Structures are given as C-alpha cells and as structure tokens.
Length: 626
Image 1 (tube, rainbow, N blue to C red):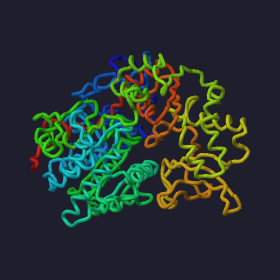
Image 2: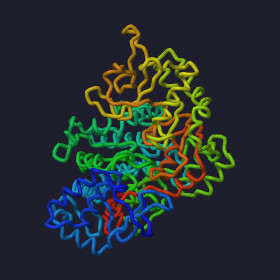
Image 3: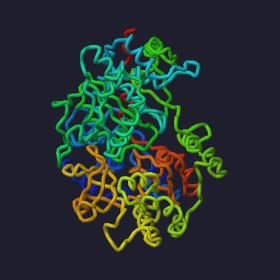
Image 4: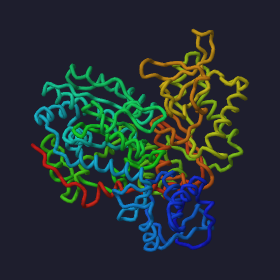
C-alpha cells in the first residue's frame, strides 16, 4: 500500500478484504450513527496490522492519497483531514486513550492500534525500560578484565574491538543486543560472553542457568552447530566448557507452548528459571512473541539478542529488532559506558552525553571474517544496506566480482530452459547419494530463493519447474509421490511430532523397515530422526524457498529469482537478506528496474516502540562501577 499526494477516486474493495470490512462494521454497530471516518480507520488498522504494521499513524496519512499499487496511474483513496478524523475517533465508543480497555487505542501522537497490539507494545516498552534503567550488574572487574584479555585478541592499534565491547555490555548490563551481518562473529562472541558470565558466577559460588534459543527450529539447530564447532578453540578454564549448554530451543519450546493457544506456560506470573537467556536470529521474532518472551525472563537476568538489524523483519507484525536498534540512525555510547569499556578493555569508543541509556545496550559488529575486501557479496551487500542503487547496479552490470553475478532475465516462460544447468549441477550430487546424512549435507549447499510465493516467479511454480527438470534428466521419479530425495519444508508447527515451521527433511528409504519411505529430519537429540510421510503436518517442496523462509540458513551457492514487475514486498531488506544467504557464490536474476526499486524501498513498519526507546524522554544513563 502506497501513500501519494495525488487525488483520485478509488473503490475501497481494492484496498480491503472481507475480514477488514466485517471488523469495521462490527465496531460501527456500537455507535449511535454510522461514521465513515471510523469505518475507514477500522479497516485500515485491520489491514495494516495484517501486513506487518503495529498501528496506523493517522497523523502521517491523514489528508493524502492511499494507493493499492505502485504504478503512476494507480487510483487513490483520499483520506480525511487530520483534525476532523481525530475528532470523530475521539468521540467514538470503541476508541480509547492509552490505558483504556477499548477495541481501538488512539495515542497522543495520532497512532491507532488494535488493543491487543497496543498492549504487546506497552508491555515490551515497560520491560525494556526496566532492564535498561536498572543498576549495572555486580561484577568482579579484575576477573572480567582477565577473561576478556584471554578470550579476545588484543589489537588496539586497529581501533576498538567491538566483540570485546559487546562482552563488556553483556557482562555489565541486564539487556544487550549484538547485531551484525553474516560472518561478523555474533555467535562466537556470545559463546565467549557465556564463558565470562560462567566465570563470574563460579567466583561467587554459583552456576548460572543458561538458555539458548531462536525463533525457528532451523535457526536453533544452526546455533547448536555453531556452539559445538566453537567450543574446542575456546580459551577458557576447562571446568567452564562442560557448563556451556549444548542444547538449544525454539522460543516456543523454551516458553512452553500450549497447543491450540496463543499463551505459554512461562509468562510474567511463572517466569523462566534462567539467569542468562540468549536469542539468536532475533530479527525473525515478531512483536507478540518477543513481548511474551520478555515478560517471561526475570528482570535481573541477562537477556541477550543476536541478529542482523538490516535483515528482513518478521513475517508477523512488527520490526522489533530494527526498532530496538533504531536502524538507519548512527548512535554512539554514553560517556559513562565508554569510560567503563576503557577501564576494562583499553578500547576507546566514541561517546556522547546526548545518547540515551539504550545506546549502551546496542553493539554493532561490522568487521566480516567471511567476506574480505575483495568479496563481491560483502561489497554489494554493504552498498544495498546504504541504499546506494547506482553503485549496486553499476557493480552488478559490470560483473565486477567473481562471487556475485547478475543475470538480466524477465521471461518466466523460459525458466525451465535457463535453470536446467543450475538445477542439475546444484541438486544432482545429493540425489545420487545412498546415505541420507550425506545427502542432507550436500542438499544444504545449494538453493534457489524466490521473492514471491505465487505467480510465474513464485516459489510454488519454481518448485514445480525444478521437479520436472530433475524428472526429465532421470534424477527423480515423479510417478511416485514420495520419491527418494524429495526435500520437504514443514510450514505448520506440530508439537506432538516436535516439528516446527521451517524444519527441512528429505525423503529416503528406511533400511530397518523394508526400505519404505520416511522423511529424515535433523534432530536435537540425535543425528536424524525419521517420520512417516503421512504423519507430517502441512509442508511444501523445498528445492526453492521464499527469501523469508531462508532466514537463519546459509548455502554455498544461491540463485535468487526476482520478478519482472515491482511489488510492495520487494524491499531493500529482502534484497540484502537474499544475497547474504550465500557463503561462496550468488547469482541474481531479474531486471535493473526491479533492483533499483528494491534498494530505494526500505521497509517501514509503523509502531511506537522506536520513539518510546530512543526519544529524549527515554531512560537516562546509569553509573558504572570501576
């Protein structure tokens, strides 16, 4: 949905679905007279919340045109003037002020919420402010200095080591965020932080209880793998390593999901028993889930979020990590925190007396240990983040780098021909394997990513195209529904089977059961577990994934398919997320027009969270002991 200044008539049926209209009519039934302004506001808050916003900012959109498309000739619906619209809403029986119990909440800044989302946001703000403004953690500074010096390399001549700074923030503060792109060492840093916190606990005769989680099963599995790979090289006391958790959870499993209910066993009244909670891939978590998580973590516990603030926001409502990080704005740290970092690590960081206390909880890792200065993936992704469309398109058009290639292609009818070589080379090795574990490993090296789900460039059609390419080349046999090697992605949680949205499995014969077909999934408890195909919850074929579904995953080689027409879902964050899924090589298929549109179209999700945390009235600084 696009905001424009032009004025032209538009049928509201193009903007709103039946649910939006029924919701608005239901609320209007409580009024003495029918008010078009109320009906329109109710429809807007319904549709915009479904599309990812937390609220509708009436003050920003009043009096201007609202379009259902992105073309220059699109018709518009003209919205009421602000004061008149606000006056009607303030008089309504179904619209309340913050703190009222009404279906809709209109705050002083002109933001209109569904009550449930206003409450989620307020609970999260209050919880965050409590963590941010609380007294710094009591630590053994000598032990912390020794631990950081031992675990992190000292290179003061190259500027501050932000991994060391992140360790200081996590040790001293109840809440911290470590944000950075792929290969910046977020997971390795947090393992060292856990070792430091364990050393602090043991010095007091305590063993901190630690929980590691992520929004999806796939992301939790990758976190587990990263921890296992990092432990051998960790330079901590030997008694510390066995105390670092080997198990990881989905957030739903950590909180204790209640089947068929939006609530969890652990909540504000029954909090988690952990002293340290780490959440990886936190950009994928929506407002409702993070609000419930924060309520369930005791205020005096360490809560650490890991993620990439420049990645796609959650599928559901909110862009919580982006709001917490105030993405798009550069921040320094408070003078007090900068002095504490200097005293502990010797790192000198920029500071300002004007920064709110939350700035000290936010650490950005910019140095990539995966992509060097000659990496096209690294260079182009940085230019995408900055919104430099000319630079990106220039580099891609000239094929400046070996690891990133642009293929200008706009004819979806030719996909089966032009994709054939990539499909056979990318998926052939795993399909020729006789061992399911090796097949799974090889399958994880290559993936096709799509921006859309439906249409000629959508993931549904592309999966069908891939299957026919492989069938025609003799790699698979489509005459069997459950053919050997078929990759499947679960798209609905099943708590009984412990399968979660995003889990990927491969169909393979089970030698123990007369080679009948089973779907093999990586398991937290063992290497793999096998499920009867007919037991599976909702699933889809997984040769091609949407870019949203690819979050939390990485592949050696990625082919990204963008459509030949612009669409509201094509954003800068989508582009950035797609190309950073590749470890070694990425091919981008599309048109320059669409690429330019995406780079110039950053995600904007309306909420009050960012203002509450970063405004001049946000919690001030707190003193640090030295």
